[in-house]
Image (cartoon, rainbow, N blue to C red; front, side, top):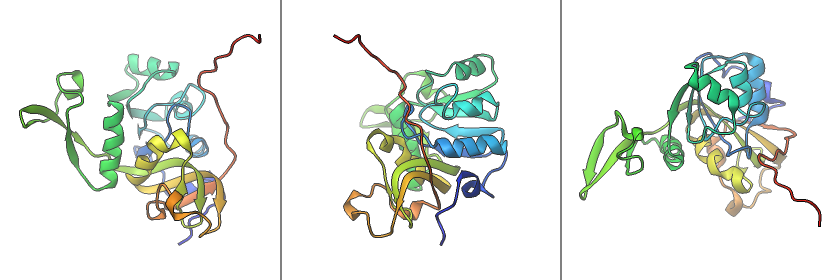
Length: 232
């Protein structure tokens, strides 16, 4: 099965359609599948629902799709650092399903494991629990959260081999691994593709069975919040 594609547009060919549900990796500005997001923007696919920890910033990450009004709904845990996100949400142009961060990661992991729902204490007694089933276990109340099953997963890894085994680097591992598992199709962009067999099996963070298509590209290394001090 061919998994390596020449570029993002080719890797997404035949997968995109209006109204689809996409799970995207990334944490802050770290590990964002920026090349795939650019290709989705260029394709003009609209009415999208994204499950992602956050929406990037105004001109990077999912933020570029907010600027072009291609996103209908965000399922997120952090909604700061993006003025356009805030403007669209407050004006009623954008739907928001707010999730605690750990709950969002577990919803992705659950979907990848074929688990349709699970119970958690997080959010009990808050607006997070509104409309959700509650159940008591050992005298404590839990709410049910649903696993995420996306049409497409887009993620960024550090290295891949030609069969799709992935290695993530540092913070980029946080949401990329669970996001990769919960899509019907998973497309990955990496900094380097290495020959099959060259990765240490103990260093692989996500096995290639989850990965359908891979591209290699150059990535921008952004700093979300730069803090400096005068030279002594």
